[in-house]
Length: 445
Ligand SMILES: *Cc1c(COP(=O)(O)O)cnc(C)c1O
Image 1: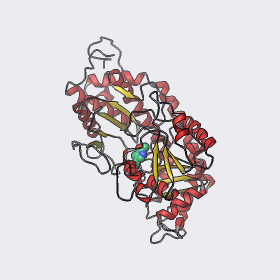
Image 2 (image 1 turned 60 degrees about the horizontal axis):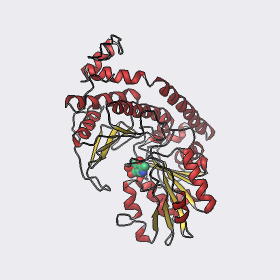
Image 3 (image 1 turned 180 degrees about the vertical axis):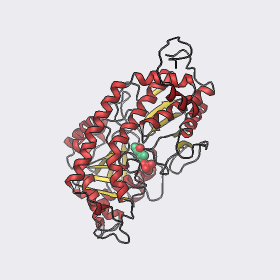
């Protein structure tokens, strides 16, 4: 196969049998050639991603060995779940793996928002103030905090909130943060990933600098990091740079695609216990909560997670480089270092956004025949389009794309349990744009 139909380079960049199966799946020669040319240039970055995955794989295995994970841990508990060794051991594994004193890792935590809400409401009391020094938090947290009036919000319980925007250039507004910290500030929430914003994702090092600054002014303030999408992307996690709590979802990175539900809170013992007493009941805390047969998937998912995250990272970088070359704004850009698995592509056009999502959907192992449509998803203030053909409903460590249907029509693309699937998804998205003449890939390479 030639590099591209028009440039005349006679190099063969993809072998014939591989091309034939891509073709059978609906990818045209021009798209395959373009994709292969981009992939060629990413070899060195992929090697660095593999090295990070190797480090994190060993970190996970080491935590499992230290805590003597055994077949008994996979037994199913029901009812109260007293003395569930599988659940208790898993929590020790999470604590060791992420550098915390204790952990709460439960199927009874229904999603990431629930885990974050739990961490907040259990560690704040009426009269306390919550501060976000990194601008607006993830959409669903607006309801939790009460930025958008909501039943059961922190605001209803007399917990106030302050926010300091990032500076124009993405830096922390240190003066603003100093001014916002006051005697009532009890907890600081720091979102690692960009979420549905186009600000840069924070590296663990930058989170560490921010926490050091805050703790110097107010040493007893609790620093919580919303760690969604950040786990295993770097060698260090936020607890290793001074955070008191990290919080995330098991149907994102640390569940490795196998966990069917769940969330986690890892950190200081007192913070985790507060959350446990709120999740179950005062007096009961971590002692109850049946494993319900999902424990094996939690262990096995965590075991696979570093490798799955590496696949997702490769997909994100591949997508960035493809769409950047086609002239779209991509965040992070094609060369930037990565601190989460999310890739934003600003299409500036609802048709291109739809075409992209249709391509991701068409490449899925599950529900590949359906067409994604925008819908009013609970917790979001505009319609959201989502493409996901996932084994676990809504799992965004599986290849998925979503975004609010409003300017700048940015798609947030993430996941991929294997690099090969992520690659197919991106090629398929490009195919859809190409077929609708929304992009011109002819003379690009
Ligand atoms: C996904 C996400 C959440 C919320 O998680 P859900 O599981 O969707 O409720 C919160 N914060 C960030 C940064 C996220 O990416």
